[in-house]
Image 1 (cartoon, rainbow, N blue to C red):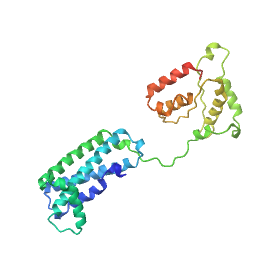
Image 2: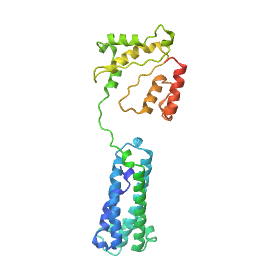
Image 3: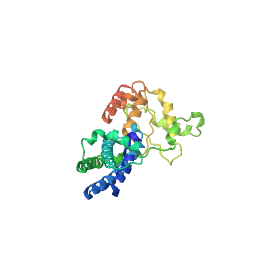
Image 4: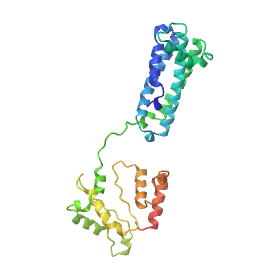
Length: 279
């Protein structure tokens, strides 16, 4: 998770520390830090969602946005630490070891910022950068790309039907024979060359997919190639096309190859394949 959120989790409490009266901030700077904290809380919430999604499932725009916010969080922590060290430099510390660690970390930054005005300018710069990434977040619709990781899901009954053995099935012989007869070539040579579409309809759970698979398995040996691809109500067309290609020629179409093809290329590949073979 830290790879995504950066130091955001530790940064927010530090900003809250800066708002304490003991730091005697100018009113304008205090308001800027409050605004910064509110925006960071919102960004941090989105980053936590991003971190909960597997990396290979994230959109590239989301990855770029999260990277920029993470880098920005490191810059912000440096500025806040710099201020805390400057303030505590003239005060007793209950924990000298912590102070020494902060001094060592920020020693180079002391030379670049020697008073509160410079720190205020740095806070203003960070605020502007944060507003920029927030604008990009809205422009790229980052929130809409981030979804909760998938939990346990039930197996699609259509997939279960693909692996049932013919010996497990009862009552399909009659419907199977009728469908095969409808698909068989007619005596009319013109009709036999036409593509045929048969719809199997009925309520869920009646065995429509099972029946279609039995017919497919029965007829497949008569053809050079074939594909049986279950499709849901809201299909991912690229996935459907890829599944068809893999079924048509498993040797030629490896996963690493077809993942690089767009929809048009997938369609062209299928068209070229079925024109050369009897499918």
